[in-house]
Image (spheres, helix red, strand yellow):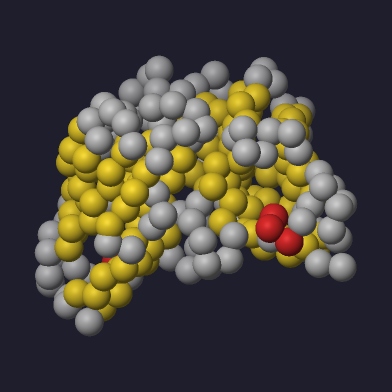
Length: 107
Length: 125
């Protein structure tokens, strides 16, 4: 199985801050990576697909980059509504696997 | 707007079989560009892919659960279902159903783009 390692596991930042979350794959997955935002009690929401493409209706302050084994999700200016846990997910190989998640809080 | 809704018991006894159904509305489960999947999240833990099915009935399961899982589809009802047998406390989780594109056409990205709200399943006697 391809292991997805996210860091940090949690972070606290101020409104307006630039936030960066990283995801590392245990092997080369090209750009076969998605990012999801998950708020408590809600369904996860697709943010980024194919490593760098913005999902439908996703604000432009979210962006994704990377290829191979190292990927990044960036929130250019953190907003209160961005409080959530963020997950990366690879689809290069079955089984589909997710990262452990990064919980984002407001300082 | 596509909508998915999970249904099933919230409480299952140890050793019994969990049965969940995902009803799809606003779109056809028989679309040739999409798969339909189940994902779960144990309390305080991350997301785990359980398995995926195509409208034709082709299935793909997580090897960690393969011996206990069956996913099926009923195109006449626009539904797909999950059965997980020999349930234990470790299977306590919120179970989600979701749509997964096949990546063949641009619009059908290989991501879970629509999700149900999730249903909490607790395993307890």
